[in-house]
Image (cartoon, rainbow, N blue to C red; front, side):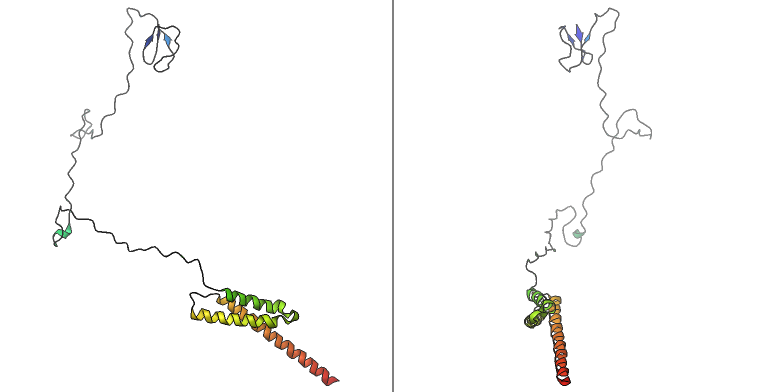
Length: 201
């Protein structure tokens, strides 16, 4: 005969090696003697005591009796509006509708201020003072830069919300004016040289 040491269940089959209940290895049980006490069964731990005050009324630890403190009833709701003609104490007051004072901002517009003419003015002005000296191309590009820059500044002044690019327009006007000033200086120097050469002959 074999016995399970955990559940004390006995099995008559000799070929069994494990308990069919919990899988514990079976042990060979010797025949009980007359003077041997009966086997004891293991019991689980006692359940925990319920939550409560374990203090004795005299202040010490009690003898295991649970003494729970009574829960006081909630105070009645106070309504200061009862004395001024509103809802009285204990009466139901309907919730007031919430007023939303905050509104989400509008989505930003995908189209920004127009500054294409200002950028074109700056490009023509820079072209005039750099590459414009070749074949006198600046004579064509610098007036374009000057006109576009002045037109864009007028548009910015009239409607600043829709038009932008003031720095670009200023750069275009400045470079176009610089080209005209340098061209005038070159013409004056060249003319003076020709005049002085004619006098020396």
